[in-house]
Amino acid sequence: MPKAEPHIFGPHSHQYFLDTLEMEREQNEREAALQSVYGPPKPGEPEFISTLWTDRYYLPPTAEGRRIFLKWFHEKYPRP
Image (cartoon, rainbow, N blue to C red; front, side, top):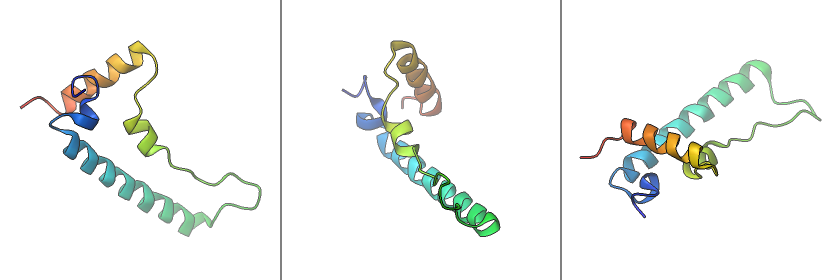
């Protein structure tokens, strides 16, 4: 499993999780800043829904997308 999904089971999964938490914090700060300037969405307008966790933890369904993700992951989090 670590080879197929290193972001969940590999040796760098904890750092990947911490990076995801940091990205979520930054995203929440940006959203709060935007709402403080522009106000909340008007009735009928779509509300912001984050897809950060889904984007980072569910691999692309295609073999090509999975290959690209794994290449990026191993570049960002090199093996010890």
